[in-house]
Image 1: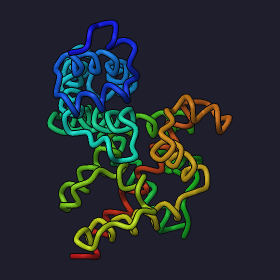
Image 2: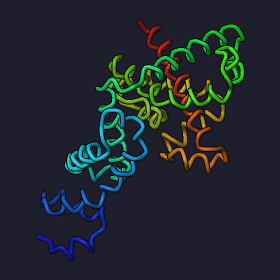
Image 3: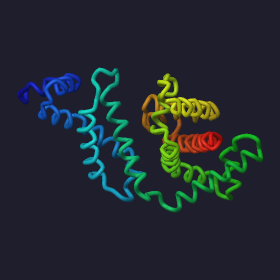
Length: 261
């Protein structure tokens, strides 16, 4: 058994290898303490999702349990950083918790529906994707109010897209598929391959800025603030672009699944 001083001298990677070899619970506890910052960061980033029904301390406690499970399940032979692995699991955990709650305020659901209907009507009428100004005019609200509403509906649209994936039995969240659209999946995962291909086509139909935001968010795993620095656009505007892109992808994937039936 390693002493506390020996534990402190080891890197996270070394401790993970040692834990897999020894199943030493003291090593596991040390790893949990070292990685808890990831849970806290993500809990803060995603607090808008759960604050209506849960406290940040409760989410962090659930996240600690997720880390403990992840340490046991993590395959050290795969070329994946544990930080990346656990970050995805924590985000997925929070989305799963939110999905089980009727957490979305009625006003946001109403706004999401009105925006979606307006954009669909205008797209059909104009033969192209409408501008923010055109949608705002159709809804008889200011462009500023439209952009605010669009940003608020972003998480709702992302969860709706993820729930659509689950309902269709894809077994993977949209973000995970977006990150792996270029990977060749085994033949037994034909449905995932078809879905990945459809998502890739959906991505190609988006505006350049929307594609870039999704790429930086899901593939490069930058947060909204970091993306705003890269793209030299305000953080609220990045959130709006993200929300719009996710809504379009949700509609695209809904049509894809409808056509398969």
